[in-house]
Structures are given as structure tokens and as C-alpha cells.
Image 1: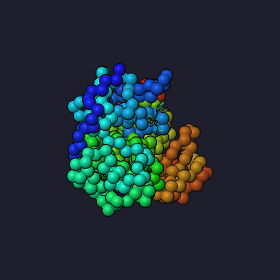
Image 2: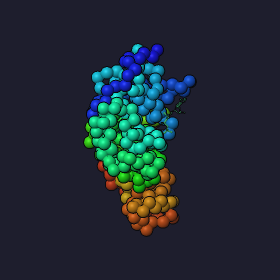
Image 3: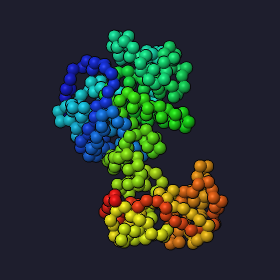
Length: 364
Ligand code: ATP
């Protein structure tokens, strides 16, 4: 069914600028296994979308469909005004104006940094300062003559980003680009990459299974679970108003505490919690551990203490036997076996109806 919509010659190179990406009803199966199911997604021009989900949920498959490296079984993808995948249309990867950055930098070891960045560009684009400009953007202007093997992992990943930017794409797709790096390098590089994608004005879709990375790099985050997009929103929207129980549990640390909702309050083992949704009856209320305070004395029992340095999580058995995680500053001297009182200090909270799968919660 594949139709090649355009000729084989590569698209002409130009400055990077963002184009919106729109995905409608995307389906992808490998044999009998459905990997993408009814995926709808909009990425505004020039914005960064983090695609967040656990291993195997289909993130890379979606990215590869956007790049044209996989052909979906159904659905449509538009980049800017043109359909690149759809009924009777399949635009080749090199014609999509899409750059890719993978987990491993995949540089040619025998070519200098500059030649790696210029690889695939036409001669007059290479000579026109495009390579120098891209290296400048990623902060590697002084390393143009080095071989990749003499660079650190972080520098190599910058080279691969420069290579993607040099071709002047409308969209950059990044597949776990920091996962091979150690923690401090990773944190620094993701700040830099976010800044330079914004500077380049290019639209970016960035795959990660790391929530912190998704929140700090993405303007918006799309949570993918088992081949479906569960929710797309800003990091704060996802954290404060998860659309489903599954998102609440996947994004951040959450207590889902059994409670009875009445009159705008959820009556729970840790007191009456104000609700952000008009529910009545048995609910599970979503409570972030940092919204619970613990004070000495009371009828809850500290079972474990998880010390993280900047804060501590107390794993507490509430009076009705319900396990509750409370995040407190420092250690506050609590130890397993202590009796504590728990209080809720957060904003009105989201809750989900408890019977069956009627997950209903509405923001206030
Ligand atoms: P990870 O974070 O581990 O990379 P992911 O969310 O990116 O995971 P995908 O790589 O998209 O997930 O894979 C989704 C599912 O599709 C997995 O079960 C995987 O085994 C399967 N899959 C991916 N590519 C193929 C293929 N070419 N043939 C058969 N199955 C595949």
C-alpha cells in the first residue's frame, strides 16, 4: 500500500524552524501484537513534547512512525500543512525534514566532528557556515577537528544534535538521548538541550521513561501506557490533575487513599480532604506524599523510613490499616515503630470513583 509521494532526492537544506505535528488515529501492529492504538497527538510548532511511558509501551514505535522509519497500519501524520503518512501517502524519511537523535550518538569514528556534522549536507551548505553554526549552537565550536573517540559521551551526544540541527529540520525526534550518560552529565545536558531547541525554534518530540527528564525538558508531556496516550498536558497539569488512576500512579509518587466523598470533602483515614471534583460515595483520593505532614503522637504507625538526603519518606500504617507515604523535610527524627498523627496540607485533590472502571474525576 506504500505510495512514495515524492521523488528520491533529499529535501533541500534550510534553517531549522518548527512545524506543527498532528497525529490522528495511529495504529501499529507487529504480527498479532497491537503496539499503537488510536494515537491522537498535536505538537504545536516550536514546542517540545516529552513522550513519557514505561519500557515497551510503544514510545519508540511512535517516534519511528513520525520519522517514517515505520509504516503504521492506520492513521494519519501531518508535519506542517502536508500529510507525510496517511491513506495512499507515505513520504520517505529523508523527505520529511525530520532530524533524529538516538540513545547512542552513532558518529563515524574516522571522521572529524565537523565532517560528522556536515555528513549528508550538500557541498555549498557545508561551505556556507552551516556546520560551524550548528557546532556553535551546541557549544562545541572549538572541537571541530577532533575525532569522536576523543570526546566525552555528553560531547558526542551534542555532536549528534548538531548534525540533526545542521540539516535545517522542521522537527527533531530524540529517543532517550541522555540515557547512556551518568547522572550529573545528564542533568546538565538536558538543560542545555532544552535551551538550544528553544533557541533553534524547532519542534521537538523527545522520548523518555524518566519522569524528571520529561518534566524538565518538555513544555508538555504525553503519557503513554500500553500503546495509548493516556494524557497530554503541562507537567503541572499531569502532576496536579491526573486524568486517570493509571496516570496518577505512573507520574510521581501518589497515595490512592480509600475515602468517602460527600459535600466536597473526601473523608479519609487522614482526615477530611477537600475535593477538586464533585464526587459522592466511595472514592480513592489522590494524595501526593509532600501534601501530608506528620507530627509525633497519634494513632498511625511508622513502618519504614526512606532517607533521601533532601527529604525523607515515612511509610506509615494509618489507623484503619491503610498504607500512606508522607514526605517530610530532613528526617524530623522519626524512626520505625513511632506513633504519628497525619494531616493533609495540600490543595483540593483529585479522586476516582472506586467501583469498577468508572474513573471519573473533574478538575474544580
Ligand atoms: P523502551 O523504553 O524499552 O525502548 P518503548 O516504549 O520505546 O520501550 P517500543 O520500542 O516502541 O517501546 O516497543 C513496543 C513494543 O513493540 C514492544 O513490545 C516491542 O517488543 C515491540 N516491537 C517493537 N519493534 C518491533 C518489531 N520490529 N517487531 C516486533 N515487535 C516489535
